[in-house]
Length: 182
Image (cartoon, rainbow, N blue to C red; front, side):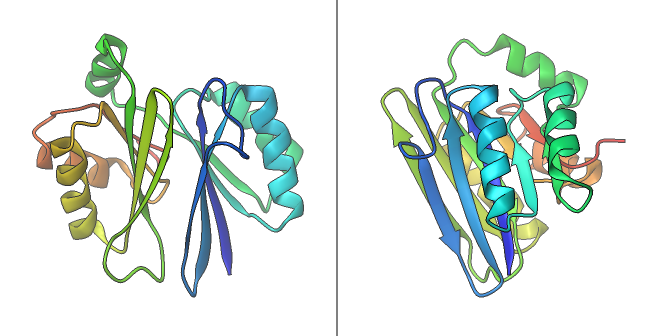
C-alpha cells in the first residue's frame, strides 16, 4: 500500500492539530500542516520510519529545503515541492489574502472524487482526490468556484496537465504543481 503525505506550511499548527486522511484499498493519504520547516523535516523523518515513500510539499517549501529532506530520507523516498509557471507565480505574489487553499491529488484506487477538509482558525484547506485528468479538471472548477485563493497539484501533474487545469478555470486562481514543469 502506498503511503503519501502532502505537507503544508501552516503557522501555529502541527500534525496533531491540522491533519486529514483519505484511505482506499491502494493508498493511505495524509494532508497535514506544520508550523515551520524544521517541524516539517522532523515530521518527514518520522513518516519515512512509518513507511511513507511519497511526499509533496506546498509552495512555501523551496528547492533547498526539499533537497535537504531528500538527502536525509534516502533515494527510495520521493519528495517534490510545488512550483509555478511564471504567470501563475505572479498571481501568487499578488494575492492579498491566502486563507482558502485547494489541493488536487491523483491517486490509484479512487473511484468518484473524494474530499478531505482540514480547518483551523483563519485557514481552510480542501483536498480532492481524483483518479484521472477529467476528474481533476472538474475538481479545479469546483475549488475555484468555492473561492479558494490558490490550488496546488500533486506530483502526477506535469506541465501539460497543469496547463489544462489553468485553462479549465480560466486562470481564476493561481495553480502550482509538485510535478515537473520542464
